[in-house]
Image 1: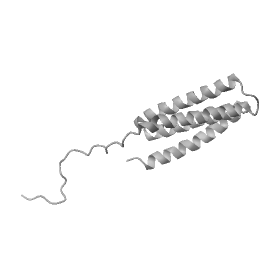
Image 2: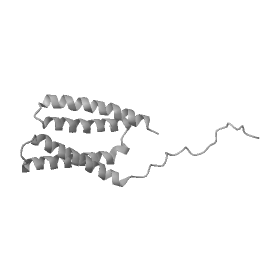
Image 3: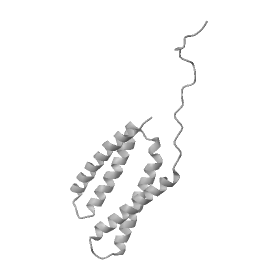
Image 4: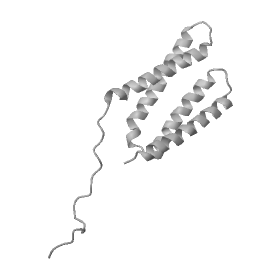
Length: 136
């Protein structure tokens, strides 16, 4: 007995699309560059035209290293996170760094928190849109 052309075939379900090739150099270079930028930014904000001290240099180094490690860790786990959690993680990292850098320029904790949360909410919304529209 002949089967109709539109009959479904019984085959294995299609596996996920093959993963994109890993870009190993961008995996460590981007957090490194972002850490250097944040470190210099923290140093120059706190220095405010004054003289350079060892404390300011350490502030920049520690700020840059902490941010680079945070970005590196997020980059390593982002592929295993759902879209919503990944977007929230990017928003949280952005909110933390913006609030911290804003507080270095002698602003209050409340104003730094409000600015960080506002920018973080915007980044979360944009990241969610970006990740959701590009999901396979």
